[in-house]
Image (cartoon, rainbow, N blue to C red; front, top):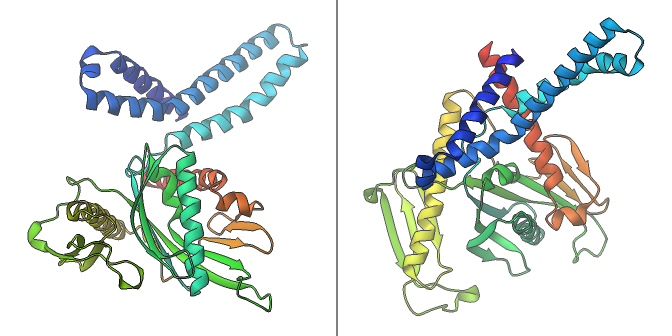
Length: 357
């Protein structure tokens, strides 16, 4: 079975190489970009196939030479070790060829909300905002703030922002859920550890063509922006609130001075939320029941725990614990992203194998 997969990888990679140098493809900017993306996505699998081919050839060559002269210890070692390494490479090739999440290439909109824990939850929401924006910047993505509601003690009641870049969703989709923090608040005189939460929603940005939003379904209200304490930010009705009547989804934006900019941002968030809602309905229809990304924000619901007294971070989905809390909160999430991505691929491979069977 792996031989057929190997041939498919080689044939497709060869075809993409030809297309990359085809003048007609090069002249079509959009098509050239699509071919380039697929080419780069297939490169890791093609490299594994090359290693598999070479190892199999080495084993066959060693077997032939041993048949002529069976006293070479090095050749015997090649023959003895090759089968296990070939099986490992075959597994790696299958994983590399697992069907990708169709949203992986998209930009993302991230919404963070303080959950259970009062002031401490708002401060933690601020920590998560800093962690995710730093991680994005370190990976070369562009971060654009969308809206924020600051808490009086610091941090945020809620904050949303967009991350733009190649395959941003594939990186940040694992951050969606309830994050839990255990630490001693600065205001705690007895030194007791408090547990608080913040929720993170990660929405793939939807293009207009993907979500059909009828103007007749929208109620658009404009009003005067206001800052903390109610003081006026400006003297024009620049803030925008859009209500999608069929679903009841409400998006408000007031951070920009221009009503047009606030409206455009609000529509981007609305489309992303509608797209996510449509995806959730689709998943339910095919019986791929998953818990909702955020849940209720209760302490008992969690995807990851940040324990300050012990300086550790634990991701409960894959039972991975790291003892570099400060680095993680400083944006070093690569270990978690890699492990979660590998687990997602393994799960998808199991699904595809079951469906094929």
